[in-house]
Image 1 (cartoon, helix red, strand yellow):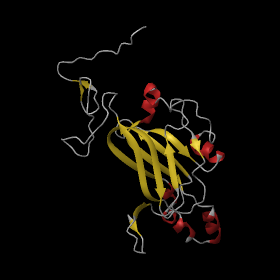
Image 2: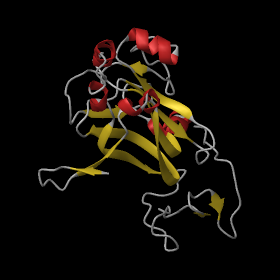
Image 3: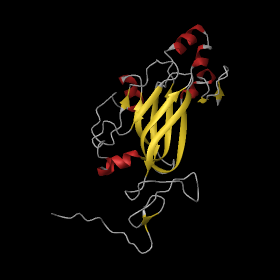
Image 4: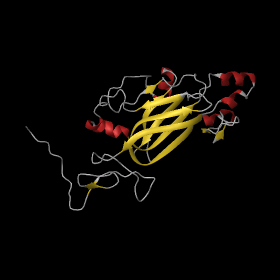
Length: 234
């Protein structure tokens, strides 16, 4: 963590600059949610560096054993094709469509920039999420990974190499002040709240109803049995 020399008590995470090696263009940050959540949005706020030029927001459904993309980010269509094999800013046609956005990869602001990733906005089922199993699966995650792939350098590193000046690349790094994640517990439609578990305060446990029990209301209580929902016909 790095703190300001001006007496500001704020702190942030910072990667090594690429002057220490171009390998630091690629840095992964992983967040363990400790259980399954339906994530609605992810907000990344930068510190004293620009927003990343190229990166990917990914999720895991199996505690980090495997990963799938939520959204890609790049500066232009050429970078979207080069890094992610898709065109920039394509139209969302399904609840689980992955896109490559160019909105948040601009040079400015040079620091303090914000990236707001809304995982429901613009999707076919954004107004009736509970009715779409595809959407519910799309939002569900146990882990989140931010895969940083290219710093925003404004091509100054090419000039520094040509002039034999490596001091420029010392200013190219990632600095993130805050990551905010919004979502809710996965309760399978059998709970309205999920307070802290009495066994582990770091875990949220659904306050189950309808004869269900378990962390996510995915089990039947003693004396109950699993039964398929039946819809009445009028």
